[in-house]
Image (cartoon, rainbow, N blue to C red; front, side, top):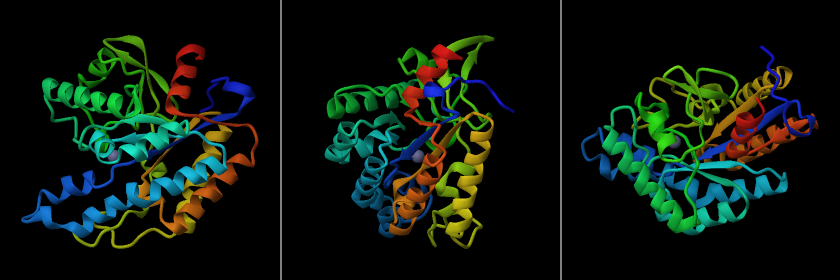
Length: 280
Ligand SMILES: [Zn+2]
């Protein structure tokens, strides 16, 4: 299970803290399946809570702990919250591509994907002065040609897949490329463990929010494993979920638990992918 990444500063493992600022987009997409779904304002407000309140609190927490993170943002959110996105970037965090309105990429044509990517990059350039080089596919899936398209469009890495517990060089047509995948996992995702709405049901079929102690233990146990085997753990948080008052304390406690090891490298997606590209 161990893999020698030779992480910087003799660190034993790498930790990528990522936050998907989906805001209203996921709820708006989900509501579309219902009659009059556009008027489900309460569910939209759950998403709105992320950019409205939680991101700033998360920035404070990261700053206090001297951690640089990666924020994946649908560019519709960037357009609607330019000052907030600028603040994230000015604080030294990375902003990654996450579609325009959190569209699923697996059923989009090549031309449609190009349109979403280009339109979003223009918005990034306008708001933060540069294009994104990292990509997280909205809702976790894409079409077979998407990887090559991302490379052609100048992306350096993705954090979308689930099929490994360590970063790897993506293979296309049998050849290893410089395009790095930093996989994440559902068990490292706050959404599946703690997101909740009565109607439309989220999560479908689960009637309770998981106990916070259990969630903390899940996050901690996975860290124990990644640390033990010298890998790169990629947490996937959502401000609207992890950013409630109580869960912010949970996150702070998790960060402190990880930091107490001393030899851990907290890094952004770009830093991790650069390292893997040149040193592994
Ligand atoms: Zn998302």
